[in-house]
Length: 429
Ligand SMILES: Cc1ncc(COP(=O)(O)O)c(C=O)c1O
Image (cartoon, rainbow, N blue to C red):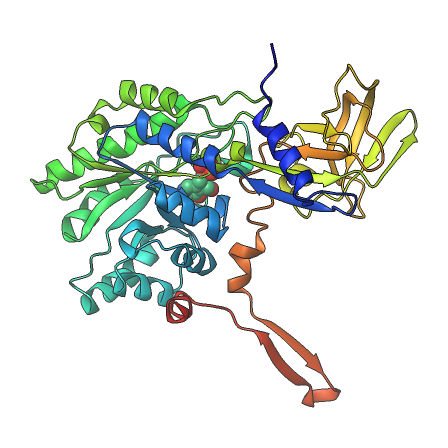
């Protein structure tokens, strides 16, 4: 019986046939839109109708990908003017966008509220600013909530754990009399209609995430009880569903997360609240791959080394934190045939990137079918936070760039790149 070809083999063959990958390839990223659609369908199938899934744009800030996610029924969670511009370019309407960031400027806040873009407030100083802005736009349709840090502790990766006691994100609920303060804050502001938490990303156990969601659900119930009516109508439970980078298996699944949430916080699964999620990595990671070419191979100290064009510039997390972000690779002959133990000798291999620092490695000391010059290497599960966002998409719009020339005190200073504000972004639309 003929074996059916895997999706990834199809991708490699198609890319070779279309001359997208050949002996001059350096590095490309490929997103599988069919896979993406199935992933979104699985997310919607796992949760009831009162759930609305937004996509965390930081995970994959490519307009074409975002336009597809919008078509499949998702909203957009953005955390910078650049992400907002990209989300708007992908066709997301203001009502389906939520702006989260711990560093919103006064102009960002004012523009969001004026244009009905929802906001999660990070801290009391931001609240004071919004108190003033709301007076200007009392009829805003922006749904405004507080980001609450339930302080439930860290997962396995410190840099993606957002709900620790000392996290930089949100309002620290368990500190001093903060809980009581928050009751008063909501009571005095009928326009505060939502509560947000994002209890952590990769490395967090589902039970830990669910316990954070329980904290904000109990809080919403308490606030509504104190006020005497249901003022809080939306619970934004963030993203954070971890991804399995060790194999092709999709685990944990959206269904597993939904089951744990339902057991921990059954109220979410009634119609009482609109529940919003902000999944990023779990939507895109397994639907994207990087393909690069082996430029050279060598042997150093008994280790087979394959030098490719994919390193820290597209695999930033893995290059700098390899223990937290291990990635799998598969080798292909220039013909597209997968390298396996049947057609190649198995050898201890480092697959390296092109950057000039020793840590620029995709994987270290892996037993792999021996790679050769001009082979292709696929780096799996890289659809989120790798080639697709490259970090400057998110941060560059905040950075103005100048040149200086001349001498002494009369240097000529020229701005060659403006720092966009949200207002600039909307003006350009
Ligand atoms: C507020 C917020 N929501 C959602 C996400 C997406 O997280 P993930 O990609 O792990 O689902 C993040 C990621 O850092 C975030 O900070």
